[in-house]
Length: 358
Image 1 (cartoon, rainbow, N blue to C red):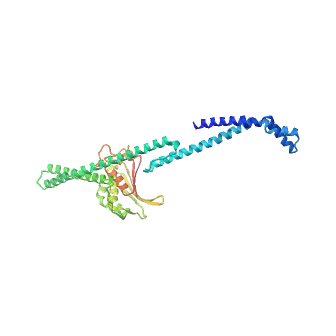
Image 2: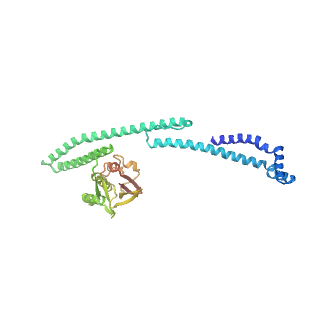
Image 3: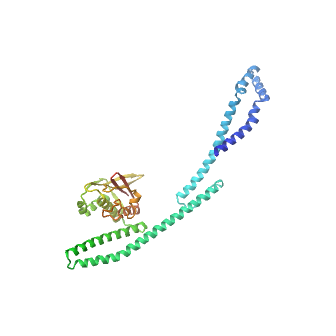
């Protein structure tokens, strides 16, 4: 549309110039004046007439084309400048939405309809954000309520099971009691994990930051989980950097992050494969980040996206033949965010790589 208007304006103005300027140049009076000036400059009349026709008289079409092109370029430049001004204004409005500014969007008068529409979009997004936030808060409150209310009866069940174990039981009944006790313990772990996850998701996290070494923390986790790692049939290959891995963060929360990643590898790795545990430093702009990277070979088909696997109760093992409850990576992601770090997942064929940086 803009190009059509520029073309129409060029033709209109060009027509005016053609009639009153160019055609004026080609009338007899202009030609006579041109020749007289050359004669005055000591050029004979015959030569002057020849120069007139060579320079002007025979080039009317050329002058018309050049004139139209110059006019078109001029008008197009003016129109483009105006369009750029409009686009800059619209870009300013979009930036206002992206930056989550509380100020309303103001554009120039010509763009008033777009200003109204952008403010409507901004209000809609804000409302949806508030609704999503309220929905998430209600969900977390419900989980906290349920987790809290489940703890009391579960504690009673575990207590009664311990009392039953002290009685004289047949081997069969004793085995049943042991199975129930084990299941109750796992249910207790899941409730505690769910409680911790909901609390962290709500932002209600009290951090106790201190300086500690990531490498030392990993060595402590390996020692604490030594029996599980030996019984897993997996080979753990450690590649801990020799650089300083000091972190200023909450030790207990970061311990849980690292522990969950190791447990995830234990639960979902193919039997007899290797698990690589690596720490290193990486540049992040002007800062340096400490990174923990754990890579394992999955024992299951990984037909999922990162966003799916970090959801609560989501598991890569869709057949649910492993012991996981689907909360491990969700806790890692939520805790990493609460600590100001990042959690990422990379999948390459059957290789599953979990990366935490802080």
